[in-house]
Image (tube, rainbow over all chains, first blue to last red; front, side, top):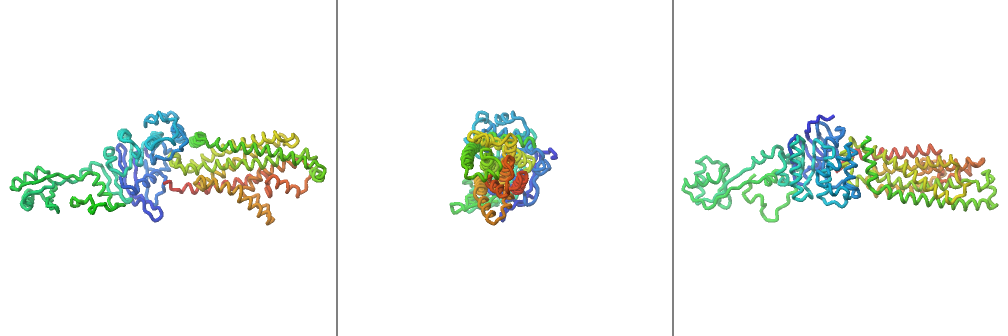
Length: 319
Length: 290
């Protein structure tokens, strides 16, 4: 049987669909107690990876385990892992309550659990309505309720925010964080970092089926670079003064400004004053997480920008 | 396993499909039952009309004692069990089409467990359909037949047994085909085409080639044999010594030309259902649910 650790381990996972490599040599682990974001652009292999983890797709190579075991060795999988894979998977003529009771029976939990999870996701008033009449957001909630039926230690969600209104997203965020605080494992995929940025503690970023970054979100934040863009009266004089002051990374931009890294705008202004150089304009620039995410995952299916210049490179390209 | 059987049973009772298909099944069975009595009466009247006395001599009893209803009942059962077969065919194919199979597999210890639980539940449904078919065929036959043409108590029991068996087996075959062809329309159309057209053409060809014994080993031939052979046996048990040629004609009337004994026919069909289910299981086991 499984070891009850709540650990998800993906090792050298590979999947070929005919000539297409959906996932290539992917490795990462997800620990309990935190929400981990599984990020990548559409088509990066996220869904395929999660489905391999859940035993729905057979890997071409490598392993994916939950609690140290492949899915089909979990015994009672519904009590170990709950999954929200898509807001489909419902018989349109079945009521929400009956849908949950079917799977409550399969997992072996009492019927009362069906009503409890419906209340938990806010579907209590729609319990006896047929799922065919549900909105996408309601189906997402029902999918989550289904995942929670067995009170699982591990929760895997594929793009759960799809179809949820802002209120629903805020609710989901709080819910997942408190679920993780209880010492459980939460893995949530998204193609938008901004969507999960406030929810996740850890991130796994993949692109073209490969891992690009894997670690705490704070670590990713710290790797963000800042620079100061300054327009001085005398470029050479300011550059020399900055070098004298120990600033090494100085770059001249095509528009005649200097880009200075490793200092803040105040220091640059002080050095300019001491050097007797006038400053006509100064601004601090930060690369936000979204752009960092884009840089990590760029290339895949990236079309050309409609303008002549790629908007992400007009600041002089800084990778 | 008990959990999964409970879940599968709930799946079938929480949508309207079971009664949606049971209504036409009952109507068809009742219609055949009624028609059987009327046709039997017509035939007996005709046979009693002096010209065909020779035949009645063969059979050793007067035509009004012929249990002709047996043949119609066997045929009624054969045609009505098409519906439980269709019901079975939708067991797995509709779950794959509707993508509910994902959650089914996520909540089962293994795919094999899920499929076996489903099969068990559909065996139960096959039996329920079988009992309904028998009930409605009987009502129809009793309304329109003279008492002399009806089977005795043992005959009723035997017919009920093979009707339920036949319905269970047809449902099982349907489940297997639905797993093999994970497309509701595809599975249903193929089954209907095969049972209503393709194999009947094959039967004609085999009869023409003078190898009618092969028919008894085909799916439709063997399932018809299960009920047809019992009907013929029951009919003959109330008649005298019958020449082989007449017996063959009687088998053909019962829709069981070239059929083996009823129990052997049942085993042959069970083997077909088993092979198809094994194929469906192999396909489902290795399938990527994307």
